[in-house]
Amino acid sequence: MQVELVSPERITFSGEADKVLVRTVGGGDIEFLAGHVPFIGVLQVSAAKVVNGDSAEVFAIHQGFVQMSGDKVTILSDVSENKDDIDVARATTAKSNAEAAVAADGEDAEAKAALRRAEIRLGVASGDLPA
Image 1 (cartoon, rainbow, N blue to C red):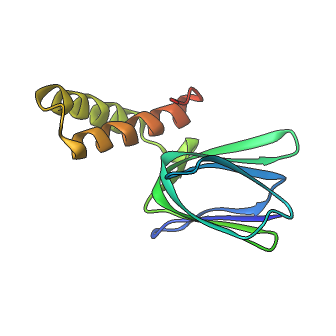
Image 2: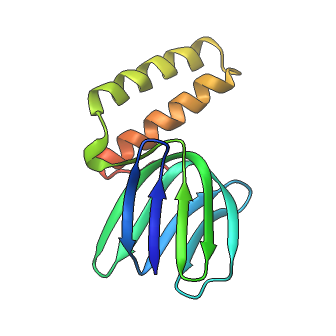
């Protein structure tokens, strides 16, 4: 099936895949295979995994939408980064800043969201993804 990961800046991935795994709001993890029923969902801040044969590429996704139509999966996201695109030093700093903000105010939703984004970016960069 055809897969595209698109952000406002660029197309992060365009190619063939055997399956795509994403995490949706309210629906949890979902796996798309060729022939999947049509689907539109809202994405969580998470990782998207594109598998083709024995190879897999993982991308940090900062919310957005996923659509399955025919044999095409399209992921539209505010941010979509593969392992090589992630500035680890910047993500580490962002994580430290977000942790400090959460420690100062445990109810700060924006700080919690920033922490989740940083954790996903670092997980994709290292290959050790958070749950």
